[in-house]
Image 1 (cartoon, helix red, strand yellow):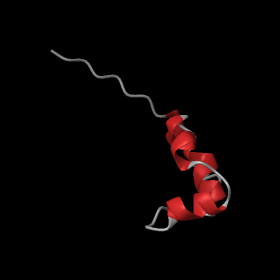
Image 2 (spheres, helix red, strand yellow; image 1 turned 90 degrees about the horizontal axis):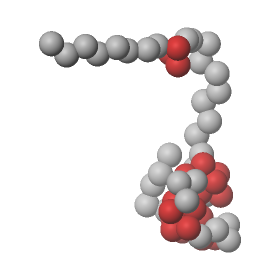
Image 3 (cartoon, one colour; image 1 turned 120 degrees about the horizontal axis):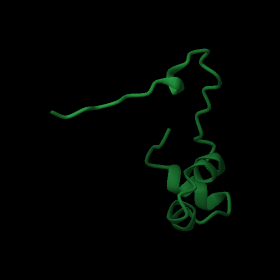
Image 4 (spheres, one colour; image 1 turned 135 degrees about the vertical axis):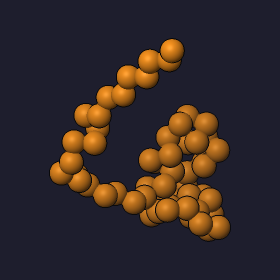
Length: 56
């Protein structure tokens, strides 16, 4: 969950938001800001859905 204070909280935690996001590490950036939302297991098989698109 990102808000207007997220970047400041990342910096207060001693992290470099630009470097973390440049390294595609939003997990560490949001965790440092205490803005990481962890939902846990959903108990569904949504990740098992596969889609095949055939164009005429």
